[in-house]
Length: 130
Image (cartoon, rainbow, N blue to C red):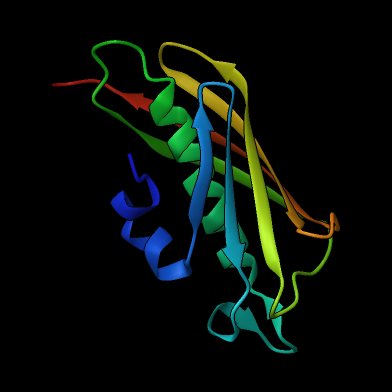
């Protein structure tokens, strides 16, 4: 399944998903001028949205039987460095806790050269049919 294609924002940002399983999700985000702030540095909101896309895919892949979906209810971002225009960011989301009602995911965002850009922790609520 092309998870990025199912999320319109992911397509707008240019997010691609390269690996996805219950154990983790890996994706890439090319840093283009359109998603940068002054000085040619990727906007923090783009980083947060990138990480949220990866965590959401992971949460979806770990949904319990009978669940209808997932939604982010909390997200915390620590910005650790810059992502310059022309770079490609690599995000690796891994589960911290998977439960029946919630899952918690942590996403490390780095440049392809390995420079730390951000650490994002998010909580995903499991949705159940009404």
